[in-house]
Image 1 (cartoon, rainbow over the protein chains, first blue to last red):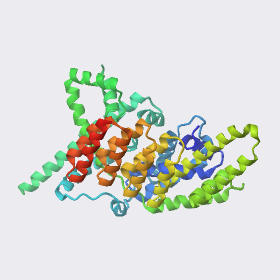
Image 2 (cartoon, chains in turn orange, red; image 1 turned 30 degrees about the horizontal axis):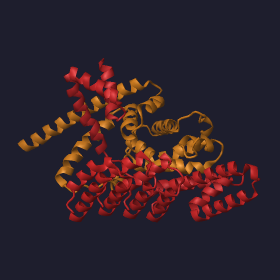
Image 3 (tube, rainbow over the protein chains, first blue to last red; image 1 turned 90 degrees about the vertical axis):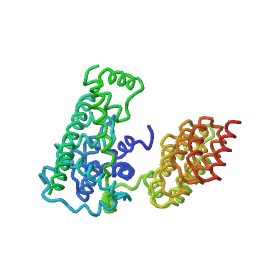
Image 4 (cartoon, helix red, strand yellow; image 1 turned 180 degrees about the horizontal axis):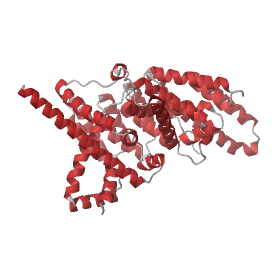
Length: 195
Length: 261
């Protein structure tokens, strides 16, 4: 077995070698942050949830199997961390300021293009926010985390073909919602022009 | 083919998981059902729009919190540190001390090992050293300081054989590192793995990505050294794209040399 594979590192952690957690953190912390950020839209909360995942890795290390798939296991932990957080906080009572995180995003020079792009993206983001938690999780893992359908199927405990069909339906739903918003904003702009 | 099967193949296509055979099947199915083709084309626009949504970087607080957590876990451990842990700590604290200790250890071990087991044990030790070097390299290459990353890529060039993780790390560094010196060092290390088809193809792909004349000249020299005829098309494309006269001439002479080789 290769010394550096996630799986062999996790087996070492299971045996009590906590030092190996550092390398796994370096490999997965940004991906997990991205996952939680998509789910919560909250930077500081997402950072705390990433920390919780690594705390749970040590807490539940004995449950990791000899033939386990580390990527699947860590995202299963992440889903549970998110569900617990969601249960405790219900739907988010307040939204933290996104300013410190938005400063970390890229800068686009062309103002007009940037405005149009921002509008399109804003509609898509709003459409994503309207999805149910499970659908949002699914689309985040497939589209943002770029996980293979087979791995996502293991996380959700369903067949690979079922995952593909679900993802397809979610994209259709998003498109319908997104175009609806687009049409709405067009109508709004037309009525504003009349005034 | 049923609608569900077409959807499954399309999902594989947009996720980049489709095989050539399935792609052919999908093409035929879409030709037979143009109504699906139009719908899927529209859905692809939404699929592609996702990648425009950027994810911000976490704040440094996240890494600091994790460091605190890991330190607290280290402190909890009742047993003295394992040899490997001590070595990894040495790697993180000062890799020179770590590698020097390891080399001294290997030499002392070699001296005391009985003659009949000498070759097999030495081979085992060499493999262990190579694996540790590889681990150090993959840790250092992620460091924020360019100097550390240069050490990492130089270390990669000293590894006895090309491991896929190492090659992938070097290719990623060549194409994505912000620091020119680090990219150049990554290229030098990659050139040592000239027998790897992955390395050759990565250098050809890098022609399209790279903009720095220094890197482009170094890649061109490497391709001449490899006598890589498969690179001619990419070289010609780059030559036609660039405006710098000196670089244009350099690429033209590279193409000629490869053709003659």
